[in-house]
Amino acid sequence: GEDVEQSLFLSVREGDSSVINCTYTDSSSTYLYWYKQEPGAGLQLLTYIFSNMDMKQDQRLTVLLNKKDKHLSLRIADTQTGDSAIYFCAESMAGGGNKLTFGTGTQLKVEL
Amino acid sequence: DAGITQSPRYKITETGRQVTLMCHQTWSHSYMFWYRQDLGHGLRLIYYSAAADITDKGEVPDGYVVSRSKTENFPLTLESATRSQTSVYFCASSPPRGQDQPQHFGDGTRLSIL
Image (cartoon, rainbow over all chains, first blue to last red; front, side, top):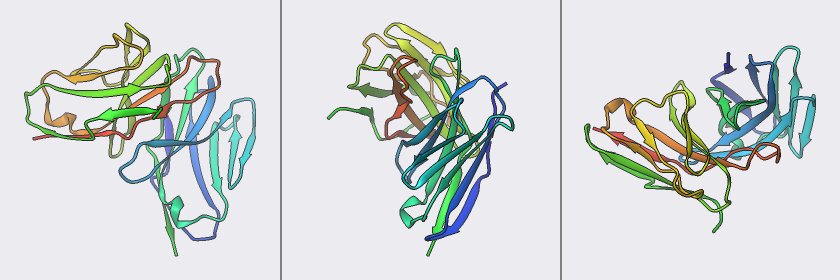
């Protein structure tokens, strides 16, 4: 079955690192994505990782994938107030017709 | 401008009325999707389309109808709106599989049904 889980809230201080976690259940996942949603806006793609990789770095963002445990994380270095948003992880499956299954989202609050 | 646009951005209507939400993309992407976003549920897939004249049900299709006569447009119709369909609706598009491209989203339509 398809199920993607995230914790609902995360609060960090400006300048600290944020780590947002995601677990999924479908071992046939091919790509895993991180999207950001700011208030009143649509989902913006942040980064994604292919399932045969275990890490991807893109400026302040680091994605770690533990395929054995079906665990995905997004680390944001030097978190800024502009990073406050809802973050969604999503998985696509081989043969899934480009469909994505989304987690419920993690609301990140960055405090001064 | 290139991209994906949804209209209207906000809509208020009454139960029993028909409502159509529009989605237009300029990338000539093959795939298009409709999601609804509700608190505690994340995004749930309503319908999707792999190409013009090809549509398929997602996780929550009941009460919705879609069509795709042209590649660039993918309207979503609520034939007889109910209060449970109050939600934020997002349209997305993506190229065919194998091009290593994820889904791209519109800014959403906020629909309230009274």
